[in-house]
Image (cartoon, rainbow, N blue to C red; front, side, top):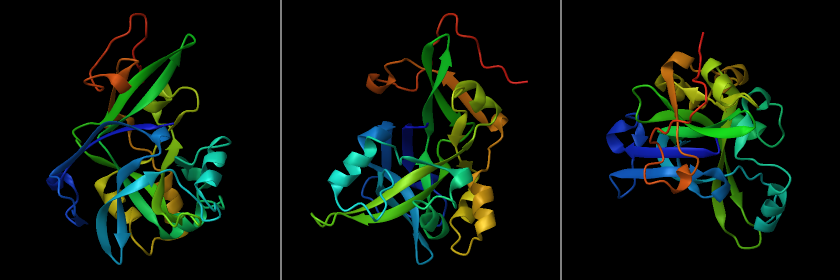
Length: 239
């Protein structure tokens, strides 16, 4: 879930403690599909200083020897996302969750709603936020054959809130979206395991989110976030 993310970052939108080391005044990506396995902006911490980095969206554990091992593993499972409830139980993610947490930046993400054997895409964002933070973990990995080193990451997911249950109505999951305060806490080096679990499974209130349908070919659209209504598709109903 949440394999499509959109981003527009301006320097003055970031938390004050993030170091901006890029030539561009803003970074824009209308649609960043995780299955492209491309670089994506995240915030990492190095000796108490936060940096905006470009990292490979796909968590690669140290025991993969080369990129061919990575490609073979993709046929069996994906490591784009990590389940927040099992973060400290999973051999692949545990050490990173304890030592290398990061923030994944977003201006909104895309998710599919299933209705009468059809799938309809939605653009989901946070009300009043042009930029928000999602919990992540990262892992440095070196290809032992080529010597190439990558900083890789996974987005953390949690149980869907009421809004996302209506949209992602098959698996009922959502990214762990953090408030600014929780984002700062998530990056604290001395965070205890219990608190890591609590933040990893945090659910933003559905009333703080908004969503609308978009065209099914949004990946190729000029404006992929533009509202597009489908005849016969019932509206999201929150009690």
